[in-house]
View 1 (tube, one colour):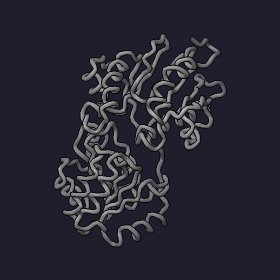
View 2 (cartoon, rainbow, N blue to C red):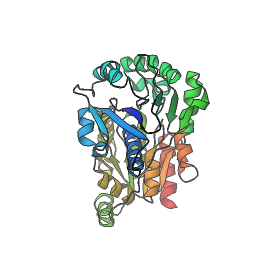
View 3 (cartoon, rainbow, N blue to C red):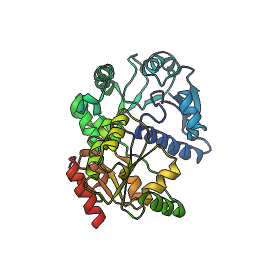
Length: 341
């Protein structure tokens, strides 16, 4: 362990973080690390020395991590089997002398170590919606997450909802779980771009925006169905491609008014902010969330939110959003209420 003049040697495992594929959990951890770096930079002799272990693509794309000591894997850790192997070999060797290791992807390597560990668990979606996972991934998580939760020195979760779920599901002492909410930077949007997007996309009609990767649990299909009850509104879907992308595109094509729904895909942060600010409503019809950062992002940019009445979203939104059931008619009703008020 460090003495009074030696900083704590902390290592962060980001090997699991496949850039632009893991959704909000990537932003969650990157923003935390950016905040840590800012705090450390304010001290002449920082109390923590932080080393980040990550893949080549994440290292190249996320420049916020440049000021950390980096150990970039030469292997293709975006492939799950390879990443697991690297965690159990190269990562285990590299962190042997660490004072603390933070694993941000919900699991710990099986190899036993006396080094204190912090484990971040974003959600327990694989337990609540197993149908959205391949059998191999589901079996892996079923085997690894409970033992990881019990083995970790400390667990962090983004909401109390997830913390309670972890404690209950894995028989873990609730007192060793610390809630660390998502950090959201001071978001701004260019007024000229906001107005431009309103004119181009809305064309004088109410504009609904949903920022989310097209994963099955995100509820895109129900939102598209809800829009059939709102023929005078336009829906813009932004976010990366997930496993439900083809289903989403098919649902748009089969809609009575396919021109009503615009699938923009992934956009820059600046464009994302402009679209959220341009929207009359941000809709978040998810079945499950560990936090729901778009709720806070929309509120920061001054846009009303309609979201599913589920644990984490209810906790994050409080009384500041319109909470609705997950059926398409309830989603449509919530959007209508937001537009009229």
